[in-house]
Length: 186
Image 1 (tube, one colour):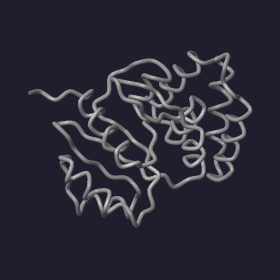
Image 2 (cartoon, one colour; image 1 turned 180 degrees about the vertical axis):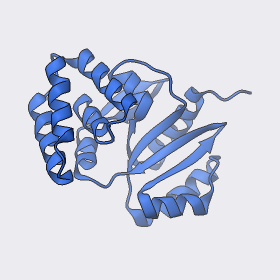
Image 3 (cartoon, one colour; image 1 turned 60 degrees about the horizontal axis):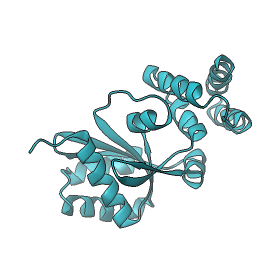
Image 4 (tube, one colour; image 1 turned 90 degrees about the vertical axis):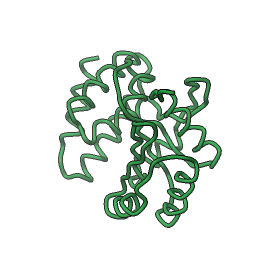
């Protein structure tokens, strides 16, 4: 039986819901829900999990049938707060929440039903902010699509406040200026 990305999504969301792990779906899948559907080959998930619980979390994932290089995952989680697992030829990227914006995104998350499963997704504003931080080409396209789709409902005060805060923390006005320009285009 060929495993599809939909199967991977359902498997990991079912696991996270069963384990009661705090998470939000981000990346290409969230772009399709909050902006415009596009092709993606993975599932990206931001998790709120204490670092001392990562080892147990990884063991449970392995027991549930996910392909895991345990030591590599533990090392990457400790060093950079990101690790990757596999399932059926696809990969799942985990980002361990570490900044205040991510924690706020968890508080403001929305439940969305996709493929018959309820899962946690960021608000459109938090999706935009999480995408603007790395600011890669695809991230900007995803942001533009989300802004177009939600143009009349965006909380621009929230967006600009966080953009200013993130720029101040980075000592780089790129984030603020990019958000300001993207919102103006709407």
